[in-house]
Figure (cartoon, protein in one colour):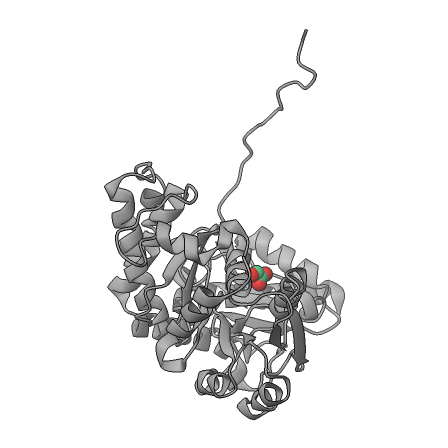
Amino acid sequence: NSLTVSPARIVDREFKQPLLCGPGPANYWPAMNDALTKWVISPMDDEYFWVLQDIRAGLQYAFQTSSPLVLAVSGAGHSGMETVISNLLGRGEKLLIASRGIWDERACSMATRYGITPIVHSTAMTSTFSLSELEEQLKVHRPAALFITHGDSSTGSVQHLPGLGDLCHQYGALLIVDTVVSLVAVPFEMDRWGADAVYTSLQKGLSGPAGITPVAFSARAEEKIKNRKHEPPFYFDMKLLAQQWNCYGDTRSYHHTLSPPLLWALRCSLQELCREGLEQSWARHTAATARFHQRLQTMPVTFLIPKPEDRLVTVTTVVIPKEYDQLAVLKHIRDKYNIVIFRGLGPTVGVALRIGLMGVNATLQVADQVADALEDALLTLKKGKL
Ligand code: GLV
């Protein structure tokens, strides 16, 4: 009566942690190792609710909102997208999607699965949207919400947002913003800019592990959730999650078991952020990327995004001459320097490399390290190739 499946051969392999200079994940803050091995707290402990409270306060600072409906959902960045879309819109409602990269395509695909009607307004991947063209779309379609990506890691562009919240509200729409690769690196002020639903990630500017995703909803969005006629998935239902996260007082309702290491990790990243300060974090990211861009000017490469003001601070999309094999460049940088950079994604596949400086890696020193490695790859591979 022996088992039909034998034990798997699970062996440890050698691995040296690379310097992660792609579009995310970034390396961890040094304090993260301790955070990830802190106590296992159960969903009934007082300590657990203290941690949730610390996280909510830290997130209010990170998003710049005083809204009570702020918490973190279990899952990577996509769970944030799923949460905001499914909580705010139901079958037959219109979601206007300002599309310039892969994340907007994902939003469209999610909306379709919920029976929401997506209306896609696209621009070139090298560009961003003007407020007047978005106003035109809002006026024509009168959607329930507009979805827009602040920083787009697939194209390396940043969307200008101030003024958009007021416009959306003028036409009766809520503003949904993806800040996965922009928060804490690029200025973002949820309340001041009138954003209604936002989400970010832990593995990019916040330099922690993927797997837990901060979300925040404005008073307008809360009202919509309160009066909605549809039910979102149980796992992402903000009405239930708000009871678990004590958004409206000491409710302590059990919903699902949150991962203790991920809670500690998020708390650790927020503690780092609050120690440094948002403005200082924005300035550090800007300075590191300015240095990297300065170094690029001396190499035989071009920026995919032509307008400097549209270039995303966290992810630079770099076009190298056609004669180079992009994968050979990536491999050289990994093999010789143990630095990871990425190729394109979605519209930039085969078009540009994606090089990221974010979180703990947003320093002049890392900017120089990755620039040195790229410079060497371009010189070395030139010999054989060109
Ligand atoms: C992931 O977020 C990526 O941009 O590759």
